[in-house]
Image (cartoon, rainbow over all chains, first blue to last red):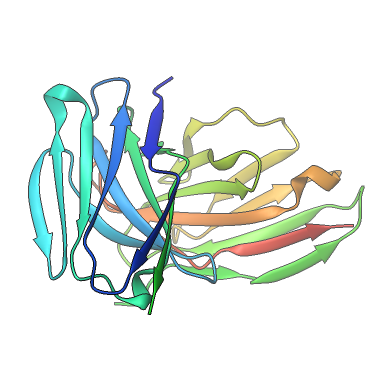
Length: 108
Length: 113
């Protein structure tokens, strides 16, 4: 099956800093989503982005499908951005394969 | 529009028991998928139901089963619980397109003693 790798596994930032999270996948995909898992465990949708670039406030994402990677950019980070960020992909219906996540801590 | 809801939110069971978890999708969504999250294995796909039929199945033993009702609500059942079944169980719903954005519920945290 498809493999998904996220880097870095852990990231510590000072409030106000920018960061880039990476997601590599091993095969072509027809769905790629980025999620933020809150402290209570719920996965919050950030982007549905199988290709191209999208922006939502301080967050933006780019997927280069031909090179099999996606990037999530967080600008001017805030303490509320802390948590785990997951990339998930599928090339078969709605069966998402998740990466291992990036654990982000933003310090005040 | 109301989001995906899951009940119960927390559950404690003992080994050998069985458990049923419930998921109500976003109104109008017909696909419901289930995922298991553990510290060791991460997030893994269990199964997907669409219009009361299982459309995809992950690599889990037969103790894990599910079903979907005509109103799209779904249940998953785990029989003969093992300690390793302790996990956060997440349900996701998506719209009519075969590959679509998935929206997750808050999860059910199951502890097996």
